Image: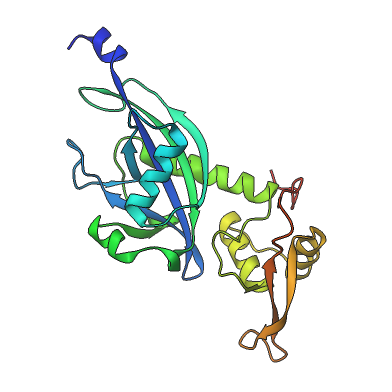
Length: 227
């Protein structure tokens, strides 16, 4: 195949950086790649676009087939189209990131694909440019966590303010002041205080909260004025 033919013939891949909250930290789900010449090497959860679907449908199908859940928080990040990304044939990749509740995943499905969770500071060398993809997806996650209140996608339905703050501490890799965090989050008007407490966090106990189902959008303009 000539270089011109290589440039004009390509496959479209959909790649998903899947983030979850586990053991008090944000983790990334990886699996061994199934395609040569990278078979067995760590990769983002990926698949090729089919002729009868659009990009969003492909991303949702890949998520369902690999982790066993649908209707997850899924956002398109960017496109990777360098001609030298893949040997022998050109592959253009559309990167997404997803947020999932770890306890909702089908572990039998994960095990069948050899998938594993990795701490963000222990991500191994991935195939092609997937390490770059992870960094870009994580930056996008940070931007969106500052533009809207995230946490519903990572935490149980009922959670304490400490648990939510820990998620934000992990996302931004910084310690938010407890009082300021609480004041800012409650000012958004998107949480409902529950009448029961978590008795393990303090002597008095900490009230549980949930996201208010009556609020259709959790967007806010720069929650913490972070860049």
